[in-house]
Image (cartoon, rainbow over all chains, first blue to last red; front, side, top):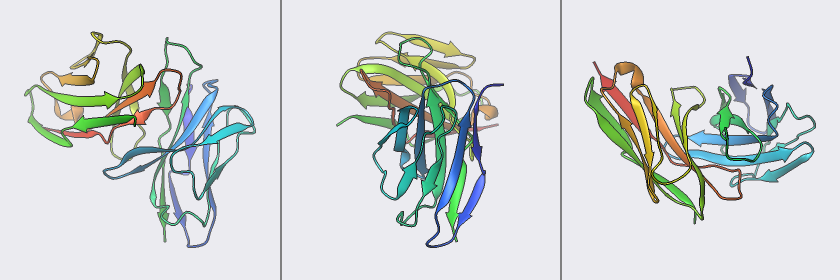
Length: 115
Length: 110
């Protein structure tokens, strides 16, 4: 079945560490997105990529970095510069531009906790 | 500024008690309005996309409607398995990025 796979499901980070969250999709979607979800704040966009080797900052990109070397993969690195990284991270992908069947497909999320 | 606001924040219903969730939006030209269901600890699951005022879509006990300024998710005779957080999101014309509301947490009591 086609879908988006995020790993790991749970991740623990020590102070000062960088950690990388994996996101892989086999939907042949061009665009991919990373969101952060905190209680009471809804989903906030971190980074997005509409094509391989290109990506743009979202609303809360500080302290995060991404790469898009393959269409299927869009890993997110949470750097030590992100002062409050504890959150639920969601990866999504979307169909190409056009009215029909437009929408986001989400992965199952990674819960990151600072210890 | 583009914005999506959902109300109420939380809603408790008795099984079989119908109700509606509200999503009001302000975007510069609406390309699409989306509803998602999210269970605790999981990613959002797509429910509906609405494109123009007057449009309606149904799925089992859920019906989504759209006006020029808001969308409603009507839940008819809900069951306990309908308990979840329901998210609304909007995308403006010419863009791909969704603006999300903070969600309505629905609890259906047997």
